[in-house]
Length: 239
Ligand SMILES: CC(=O)N[C@H](C=O)[C@@H](O)[C@H](O)[C@H](O)COP(=O)(O)O
Image (cartoon, rainbow, N blue to C red; front, side):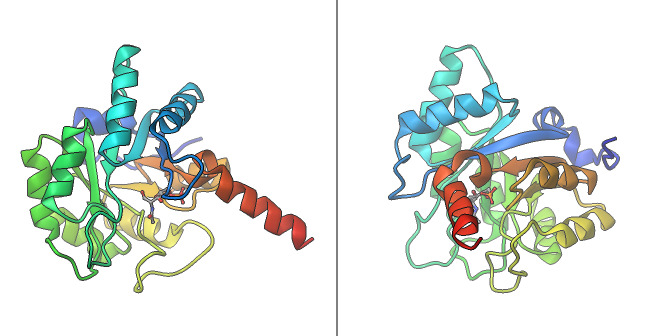
């Protein structure tokens, strides 16, 4: 049986309500990937929705516009979390780092803008990115790597945090699996969160929900066949 934490007031927003206990699929193709084409991102997104995803996480204005247009043509209104990556030079912060990027993502059709919510040296504060997001009419998701960053993001006005960056900042633990300790800490503090990062099996995604995640974002295991192939190839070669 699924155990969910009691509904936090912040989660009463209609969009977050529709995502409660649901799977969100991240559909991103990195530069150099054979999948780096808008039409492929659209097809992968439609496949994810056909399989039961309730929301999508997409990167860059082009992909967001492409998927939004196709879904609208089909009469479907699917929640989209949007972000940019590596758009701002000279910073370690690589997920949506500036108000301009926030606006690009929101104007392309994202309902939620995901941005870096870590303690890394950054060109704009989390509060500035929250303000830009709200001014653009979207909800603000801070991608964090620690409990302290989550607390600071909520203080700065974020609507939700994601565990996305755990394992990708120098001050968070590197691990092969999801950061369940971070999820437990967020839950213990009563902070709502979306679980994201290395939820590589259905069991791990379900476990994240049992540990109080509002929703689970899965990317690589569903939409990066090159990564999944590498997991298999390495296992086979090491056998
Ligand atoms: C750290 C970072 O850059 N994460 C990115 C954030 O959007 C994506 O590359 C990930 O695919 C996404 O977070 C989902 O995670 P996973 O692919 O592990 O299921």
